[in-house]
Length: 449
Image (tube, rainbow, N blue to C red):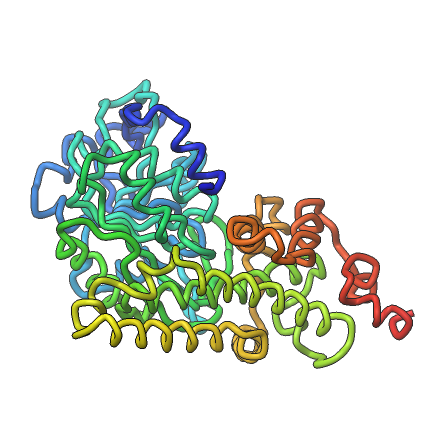
């Protein structure tokens, strides 16, 4: 049975046409003086950049301008010869904020880096009531798109703009959590939304940078780390994906590196485990990341061990499942194997190594190592709950629960289910009260009292 998100796509009319979208920029805002020509904002319609094919091929669209979007925008703008960049916001008030205080600001190591030369647009099904009316990319195709929205919004946002996507488009998902288009679901989705191999090249990246918000279009680069980028689902023209991945790997401060599909999958799984522990626990305990790892024993340590054990069981079951053959046993590896026996031996060895890598002890060692590196950071989920925003708990712990259900009803994810409920209910708890909610902590109850 397909997951709920995919079933909703399949239940929809397959041939339903994607909406026509219109550009709103600063020239479409009421009270905007005409003509408007500032390098710090959307260019006027009569100077639209889309009429130049080379510009269109190089232009990078960044959908979502939160912490990650700000990181990508500032890094790309720092290149010696930056590509033209369009920031796509999702609310009119963000356009108004940009008009009042234009520019992206990134604070890093005590210095503020400000960049102004962006186009800023809102894409709406409703054409603007003032100024010139223009369709997104003037009806042409988007070549390069970075999706930096929250995880739950990523695929719906891409689905909404599929009118402007084809086999020449490259999309990079930059969310926390697992991308929804991993095999086996990606091909099913693309066949329901695109004709033949006309779907874009879908890529994803895993970033370990620590970035916190300082306000609209302003972020603090708390910890500089790296970015890994690789393919999830490619079409018949995989060479089309090279421009965007190349420019991201060249961007200063991102420290980008290309990885293979199976390497990316492993990195996303490992980061998912980290996020499913650190994010929700810091959100309900209202603490810095490092506070989770101060004690190797006690209530919190026992809970972390239980969460890791459940995650390990789910991921090991996933590794054993034949649905992962396309990742663990890709066609490129089959082409280099001389015999079926050789391929089978390689497959057994590969899965055995992965089962060990995702064992509870190995995951625990990895988690505590990452926890030490990000100990002074504030998790994205804690930032979200403090700001009254929707969290990504369903993309982390919810993904583990959903995967467990799809693989085997006997997989126990009780602790992750409880954690999801606590975050959804907005609970704020002292560490000692965890014994009242989680089965694994019951043995520590007498010691905590």
